[in-house]
Amino acid sequence: HLPSVEQVFCFENRGAEIGVTLGHPHGQIYAYPFTTPRTALMLRSLAAHKDATGGENLFDAVLAEELSGERVVLES
Image (cartoon, rainbow, N blue to C red; front, side, top):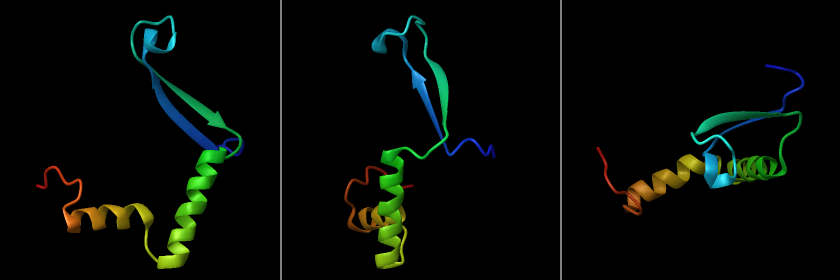
């Protein structure tokens, strides 16, 4: 843990598709000294769901879809 890093964002550039001169895909990592607004919003939403239901938002969503068969392509 680095005290100056609050959030890490890993991603892959794909060359010409985004105007990068390297023709092959390559990974990059950004280390932010703050939590980005989008991530902060997602964390607040997850916390609000947990406060309201006692459950975990993503787990609850997957479980509901699994039980209903919605968007389940293959179960093994």
